[in-house]
Length: 124
Image 1: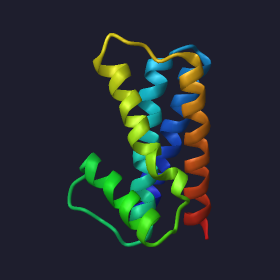
Image 2: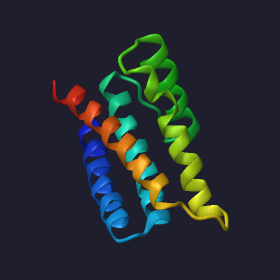
Image 3: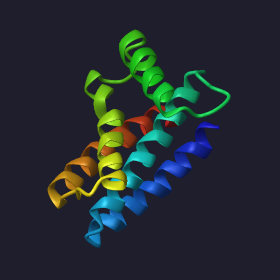
């Protein structure tokens, strides 16, 4: 399962970059969030944490609570990455507000850091 979700995350990261490069910042925020979600699911699976169904809040809680706070497998700075990206995705998808180039760029930077860390962890 971890490989499949990491592959999906990599595909969505490519889509997020394409959206950013084309000025589609709301779509970039959407793809960025799903990239992070899928990468975190892969990380959880690597550490034996699996759920019968994917619940976004539970994924965030498991990653933050188990892999960051309890096991200290991932840096504390990653604690808010997924929830912050969900907030921006919700803003992009469900409000009349738009994601700016600056915000999308910051999001991509954090996303690449998170995915890169998880890829290294899974590649061990």
